[in-house]
Image (cartoon, rainbow, N blue to C red; front, side):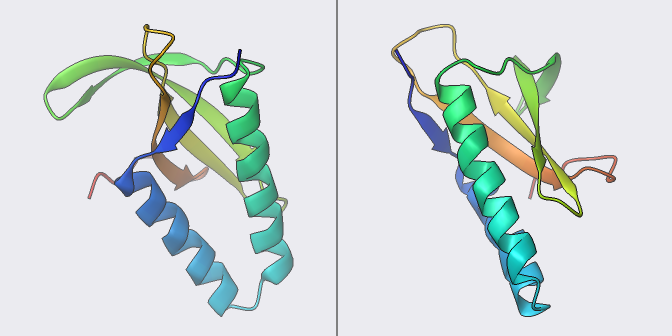
Length: 108
């Protein structure tokens, strides 16, 4: 049974920033590929078709096990950080997104 996938406000803000940045540069096909990759990622995560690498991270003082998913947008790849709660009734949370070449996630 597929689980719900919910984006945090931080994830939504960063994704929107990437989409607006590339749309303002006229990269409409890139934006379309990023959007298609995002939808495919959400579907794969919800149906447990993809289990990303597990890493321990501290988020707001709490240590949790998070996973990573690589979204292929053609010219660039994006790394998505998400959390799968142990309780099956809870939704999967998309925590953050960054461009693949960057070393760190921005948490603001």
